[in-house]
Length: 240
Image (cartoon, rainbow, N blue to C red; front, side, top):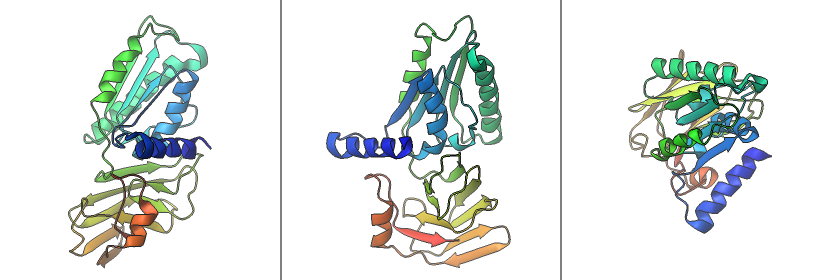
């Protein structure tokens, strides 16, 4: 219930309070940090940046943070539940992901030496770091790693029957959409608009040996179906 609740809160703040949908942030401390570890990867398409303070990720992984700048702050002496050790592991994972994909996985990961669960406000440095970022609703590469709580849409990708622990990796280069990885996922929908490519020209979708070359028509129904805020909607789609 938490994911749709946050989605509704964002929607309400945009509609009723004039919040910029590209400058929405999430942060949490201790158990709230646990929540950020969980929510940030699976709702990365809703936030400009995320800040995890003194939490534990449990079973979640950082792969879905490709387009979400992620601040991580944990005390070096925060031994309970191995928060300090797990945070260091995540720090190394984020470094490795960024090295392999330099255009993604922006992060600030700090283990505060000599500090326990409470970091004497040193973690607040993460807030100014987060504030420099704005959301890109239409990144040219998406890594969608489903958690045990699943979503049927992530950025410009959608699936009919989402399955836990599945991963889809896709990118756009010119007029070509490439599905690099999809595992056992079936019936992928690719949503598109004129900010991502030229819908007046043919679009090619590739996945392994499968290739679709098609005209993508602008469709009012797609706008209605995908509209989440004034910055986040699509005008056409391809099913693959």
